[in-house]
Each structure stands twice: as structure tokens, then as C-alpha cells.
Amino acid sequence: MNYPFWDVPLGYGILMGGIAVVHVFISHFAIGGGLYLVVAEQAARKRDDAAALAFLHTLSKFFARLTLVAGALTGVGIWFIIGLLNPAATEALIHNYVWGWATEWTFFFVEITAALLYYYGWERMTAAAHLTVGWIYFAAAWLSLFVINGILAFMLTPGKWLTTGNFWDGFFNPTFWPMLVLRTGVCVMLAGLYALLVAAPYAAGDFKARTVRTLTTWGLVGLAVTVAAGYWYWQAIPAEITTAALQMMPSPMRALRAAIWLAIALGVLLLVCRAMARQLPVALAVVLMAVGLAWFGSFEMFREGLRKPYAITGYIYGNGTEVAQVEHYRTDGYLSHIAYRSGDDGADLFRHACRSCHTVTGFKPLKPAFDGTDREFIAAIVRGTHLLKGHMPTFFGTAAEADEVAAYLFSRIDQRPLEQICAERGESVGPKAYAMRCGKCHPIGTASDKSVSFAGLDSDGLNGVLDMAASLGDGMPAYTGSPTERAALVAYMQTLGSQVTK
Ligand code: HEC
Ligand code: HEC
Image 1 (tube, rainbow, N blue to C red):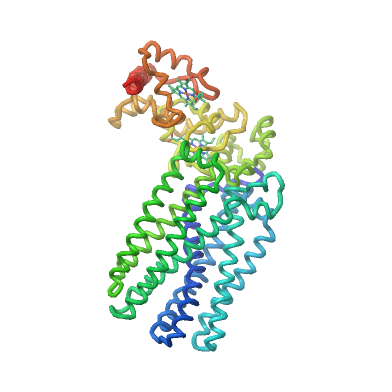
Image 2 (cartoon, rainbow, N blue to C red):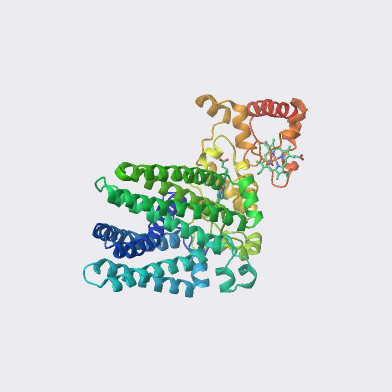
């Protein structure tokens, strides 16, 4: 909370996802593509295959432009964006890994220098010198992945670093090796996908058939390595994180399911391309590329989502709250620790506690989550964010500060009673009231579903449950809905209870 808050009318997740997915896609291609170029050049020179060398020359031009321009720009863009979105976590990463970053930037410098020499060297260097430059390029690119992988994997699984603070404990953390193998597989696969895009416009014939077959092999081998390492990665993540994800974290699990289906689609499409090697249509190569991008995007969203509620597990929360400061926040509240205040305390508290993940009406909006409820209920939810599905950071501010966030949100929602909103939208009140007031903490069908407790209770009994609501669980809100809403909710709870006994 030492930094001003950057309030843009966009979801942080969208900003970060948009730039990061493009960058990782290009940067992995830069590595895999480098390997493909030298391996293919070596083979082509041995066969004295002029057509293949001309193809590689074209590919290296496309490749140099994409990686050196788009890759470098989005890489700097990531620094720019994370510095604005979570300055405290960025600061922690720089402090702990300053030599790591310096090493990575050195490799990157070697990488781009070698990439330029390789491109210009096709007609100006001897074959041996050109190949050497190619290998230097690939080695530097992969080593930069090696370094950055240590820092990225650290954010989810800092392991022993949390107690020792030792650079190497953080670097060679529990998911370092599976993640490195996984990303290396991705590099090989993407090299295949990109090069297929370059090969697709070539005229149907033997050369195209041979090239496309080789490239689909790269794609399939890379995909197989990735899938196997993906399983190893999941196993290497501490069980408390994966269990929480399975039970309480719908977004990363949705992303993981999407990634699994897209990986299957990629495998099938690669086989189709292989079967059509002689006359591979450009459209198919484009579809393959799009599926590859969607797949990698889903995987990265899964990996990022899994870290909730943290930016660095056990060290700093997604909203910039430092774990080491929690005791101070609990006693003094947040406001006295916010270095730059705007004069509107409710807004400042909302920004620092919630705004890094939610907006009011845009990305992961809170307005629909509270429309038709009341200020007291919203305050209880603010105090109880750690109890909700989604695996959010705890609100460590004081009760008075939770009220200020609630007032801020309440003044921005639809304040009509829920039954009126439902009538307008044609929704039934009972299920909606349950979703708004109970389902956030007790989603139906999950481990925290309370339907069993409703079984066998008549409407008096269920009204009793609602009367006692605030004393049923630590953090459970009092029931503050209107009498009409209450009657509809009770009827719905009766239905839920009767479904259990059946
Ligand atoms: C680190 C990110 C993060 C922070 C910070 C955060 N949330 Fe959340 N919140 C989530 C995620 C993730 C979900 C699950 C929704 C989803 O997966 O789409 C969620 C869900 C919710 C829901 C349930 C939405 C629904 O549809 O029922 C509410 C209400 C909510 N958050 C309120 C808050 C409030 C209030 C704050 C600030 C005090 C806050 N959140 C801070 C990430 C966060
Ligand atoms: C902010 C989160 C939250 C909300 C919202 C919430 N609860 Fe709870 N509820 C809890 C917690 C925490 C407990 C205690 C731990 C437990 O039993 O899981 C609890 C316990 C209960 C229990 C006691 C179960 C038992 O066997 O002792 C019932 C019944 C219950 N809730 C029903 C409801 C109903 C009905 C609603 C909606 C009107 C609701 N809850 C809304 C958090 C919440």
C-alpha cells in the first residue's frame, strides 16, 4: 500500500492476460523456432537441398521480425503493466531476483544479437559459421527461459524460500523442473505450428509434403512432451493448492478443462494436417495456430488463476497486501497504511482491497453480485471474502472499514428489493435469493453445500435457520432480506432439502 493505485476503467485480468498471452506465445516460439531453424538447416545442407534452404531463409525473416519486434515490445510491456498493476509484488520480484533478471537480460541480448546475425548471415557467412550462430541463438534463448522459468514457477510454489529467503531455494522451487520441461515442449510445438503457417502457401508438391510432415512431427512431439509434463506439474504443486482449486476455484478449473479439450483438438488437427501434407490449405494452418493460441492462453490462465489469493504464494496477496503486514492491518486497519489517499475512503479501500481483481460493472463485476441486497449484507460479505468461492484474500481491515467499502458498493448497485428486480427480469425469486445470499459461500453440489441441514425442516424451522443465520458460522451474514424475498427463499430451501432426502 506504499504505491498510488492505478485506476483504469478495465479489468486488471484482461490487461495482464492480453499482453502476457501474446508475449509468452511469441517468446516460446522464439526458442522452438530457433531450434527448428538450426536442425533443419543442418539437415538441408547435408542433403544440399536448395528448396529447403530457401524456405528456411524465408522463415527466419518472418521469425526475426516477429520475435525481435513483437516479442521484445510485449516483454517490456509486461514489465510496464505489472509495475502498474501490482507494484509491491513487482518490487518483491526485483529485490529477490535482481541477479536473476540481470542474467536473463544478458542471455536476451546474446539471443537478439545472434538472431540478427543469423538472418543477415544466410548469404554472407560460411555454412559452418552460420550454423554456429544459429546454435548460439538457440542456446541463449533457451537459457533465458531457464532463468525466467525459475522466477515464474517461484510465484506459485516458493517452497523453502518462504522460510530461508535463499535465492536458490526460490529459484529451484518445487515446480521448476516440470515447468521447464513443459515450456520446452511448448517451444517445440509452437515452432511446428508457426512454420506450418509459413509452409502452407507453398505450391502443392513433394517439397511441401515433406516439410509439412516434418513440421507436424515437431508439433506432435512437442504436444506429447507438454501433456506429460503438465501431469507432472500438477503432481508437483502442493496438495493444499490443488485441493482448494478443485473445491473452491471455478475459474482456473474452467481454464484447465478448456486447455485439456484444446490440447486434444490440437492433436487431432495436427494429424489432419499430416494427412493433407501435400496440399495443406492456408486456412487449416491458420485454424491450427488459433487453436494453439487459445490452448496456451487457457493454460496460462489456469496457472495464473491457481495462485489466488496470492501474487506470490504465502508472501504477497493478489491485491498487494503483504502477508508480513497482516498483523498491523488487523490492529490499525488499512487506511492508515495507504500512502496515497484520494479523500474518498470508501473508494480507496475498494481499490486496495478489491479493485485489482474486480470492477463494479465491467470485468468480474460486483454490482450484479449485490443488486437487490443491502448495505449490512454487503459489509458481511466484505468481512468474509475468504469464505466465498473464488479463493479471495481475506479482508484484513477493521469492521468500520468493511462498512465503508459496503457503503461505496451499495451506492452503486440496484437498490430496489430483489423481488422487484426479479419480476422485471422474469427470474424466480427463491433460487435467485439463494444464489445472492447463500450460494456465494455454499455453492450447491460442493463440499460447503448446506442442503442436508434443510432436509426435514418445515417453513417454521427454515425461518428459524434464517433468524439465527448470523450465529450459524463465524462470518456468516445475518439474514436481512425483505419478507417477500424471505418467503420465496424458505420455499426454495424446502425444495433443496427435499432433493437431498430423495
Ligand atoms: C485476488 C483477487 C481477488 C480479490 C482481491 C477480491 N476478489 Fe472477489 N473474487 C475473486 C474471484 C476469483 C472470484 C470468483 C469469481 C469467478 O471465479 O469468476 C471472486 C468472487 C467474489 C464474489 C462472488 C461473486 C458472485 O458472483 O457471487 C464477491 C461478492 C466478491 N468476490 C467480492 C469481493 C470483495 C468485496 C472484495 C474486496 C474486499 C474482493 N472480492 C476481492 C477474486 C478476488
Ligand atoms: C459469507 C459466507 C456465508 C454466507 C453468505 C452464508 N453462510 Fe452459512 N455458513 C458460513 C460459515 C463460515 C458456516 C460455518 C462453517 C460451516 O458449517 O461450513 C456456515 C454455516 C451454515 C449452516 C450450519 C450448518 C451446520 O450443519 O451447522 C447453515 C445451515 C448455513 N450456513 C446456511 C446458510 C444459508 C441458508 C445462507 C443464506 C441465507 C448462508 N448460510 C449464507 C458462511 C456463510
